[in-house]
Length: 514
Ligand code: GAP
Image (cartoon, rainbow, N blue to C red):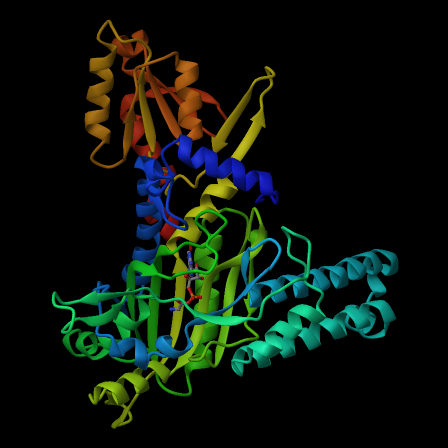
């Protein structure tokens, strides 16, 4: 179960830094807001998450292929995609605290508080009435709950209208009517709401007059759309088919916060699935179910995931939902699944003047395919794994340990090789064992400090197995294996280590169990 506690996030942030997972970027210059570097353990965990995603999407779906498109793209792409005109967030400042917020997030938080009130009343009533309880009837008839629910529905409708109609006056009125107070100053003294474009721009070309303004991509998806026909033709792909890509995206977030949850430079794992028009809802449901299973197979607790339908659809979507995860700060978006219609391809056709159509040999006709997209933030995945793996344990002897119960297939190191002493040929024997294992599993060699301290360090970076080499090893070729989660220890033959690691840490096995 993910632990819902602000303190947990703070602990995870400092643990991530202390143990080489995530560092603030440019730290010696006091950091750069919303930008982070991944350390020696972080990069391994990140690569393993990528592998889990990439192999699932591409190797396990023979109609999905990969792509690695450039970050710099022709500026007209962002005009066609709608990002130049519509990739905005509504920004509002509190005049007393001078803090800046996203107005829509303040409104959504206020709505969530009202929804929590409804849920609490429902829970209480469900206990009172027992099996005969009818939730819909209760919400409609209990005067207090009906009032809360009415407020929720009205606020959602007004938020949707304000966002769709780009009406920032209505947005400010909503902030006022919901009596939103600044969490810092506690006051309701707000500025007007202004739209803020999230794209970073830079110049390409050496001479100022010739230079073109170009953008750092705010999503990897557009690189897929503009390569749609290249891939379809050269790969002889038949609809339905998908193109998957992992890569950096950049957004000048109004407020980048909550560690690597909302960053200005981050990584996305996106897949665009091209389907016949009219079949998009079937594929939308298909991908919702597939993606949820992919997440839940990791073993971080099924109860920590839920779907959340979008009420305010993005400019390109006819259906959309999030897979939310129970982060330390509560349920938040982890992945987006969007039915993007033919918006992007149609628009690129218009702006580029090039046909982006598929000839369907079965129907003997050309059409612009519809698209179902799955888009998950790699950094958010990383946070979901790290935060829910972090456990503080009190042990029987009264001591404490911090252990990262990272799913073994994702763990940065699969096994630690620990010679009990730095003499008597033990290091040489340990190295010989490592020289066999290192071709299949990432190993960590450590011969400093007491064995107890070394075990604790391995717990703290989530290494699932420790192998200790002692004097008995030299005599009978057996070692001690220690299990991270139970701390149990067994004696086994060195030749058995490999099959245990294969059994417990294999990415292929994890993928097979989806
Ligand atoms: N191509 C669709 C798209 O970009 P999105 O919902 O804006 O949709 C998809 O982003 C995913 O990217 C999100 O679910 C989240 O995991 C991740 N993401 C978005 N903005 C992010 C940010 N500022 N920092 C970290 N991850 C982010």
